[in-house]
Image 1 (tube, helix red, strand yellow):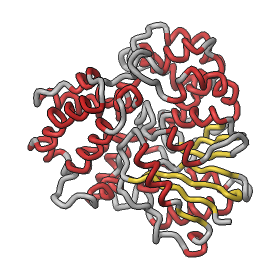
Image 2 (tube, one colour; image 1 turned 180 degrees about the vertical axis):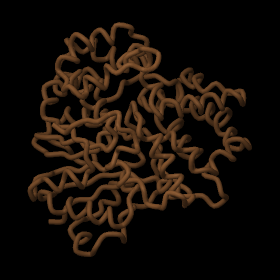
Image 3 (cartoon, rainbow, N blue to C red; image 1 turned 30 degrees about the horizontal axis):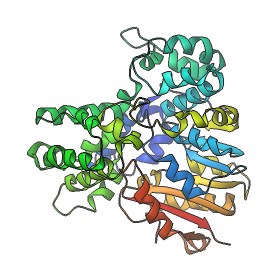
Image 4 (cartoon, rainbow, N blue to C red; image 1 turned 90 degrees about the vertical axis):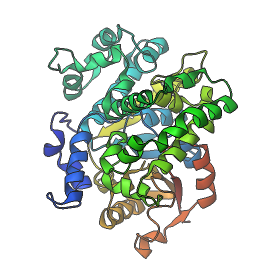
Length: 415
């Protein structure tokens, strides 16, 4: 088990600094990178913002597959377990995400039943959650992860107590969404009223009447001209530049408006828990809509049974693959990590992917912009080993309920 150092912060997190820092410290870009790094050193994603159902369809994930994925909030890794893969290796550069992934795995294995699990991760204001942690989860955690969740803040509260309230209002993303709600309210819009819509037509009417006009407000246009405005979404400076490549007027407000339009209008609210988190800041109740895939009752037993097949590593994707034998991985899930990378880092990553990939292996990833970020950036000897499934990528991107990315991409090992 990889050692966890959750209190190191950005300054002590060599792995994160290596991945993020591309410019000199005193340059404008360098200062921006370091500010993002400081923010990213805490918990960023209480919930992952990639659609696991799209992932599993793209991978054609099946029993026996060996998977390597970035962890983030851990929701997708757990969803993959419903397909009974042989092995999942989870990597992440953020030790807070490592602690969250290990907590979720232990919860599935050791909480007494499905109802108690959903109380922890699918509901809000359940005051007994920290007691359930003490009784069932904590004794089964490694010492570092247990210490992480037992650590007390300046107010004397243990970190695990966030699950007694609404965990999804915490972390960098949770606070960013809260700020978005505050700004909307300052302009007379209560975003949580979106929950009252009952049809796609009503959803679109709400968006066009109340949400879309916000993007023309001077405050919002001013904010979205600055890279730091999207740090709360976990979007680093390099990824902001990818988004900005889609805009032609100095602000990415139109790009964000288009992405939010997809989130609000393209999927029935009852089927889209991402929209619930964005607009209502909680998951739907049973009579309102679906929980995330990993929290749906039909998958509980298979995830619980397969949780022991997961190993969680505080490491980069490339680091982990370098330790694996050739032809030992069937599926790779890169999330949007390559948006952070320079050409050298992308080349090293795909060199290890190509070496470790089994026949018919697949790689999936997302990009802030629409185009695949690796096209034209890989050595010919590596690029020739992979086939871009462009049509399938485009079709599944349209089905991604999280809606925040411009592109979804699938590559398959050439036969």
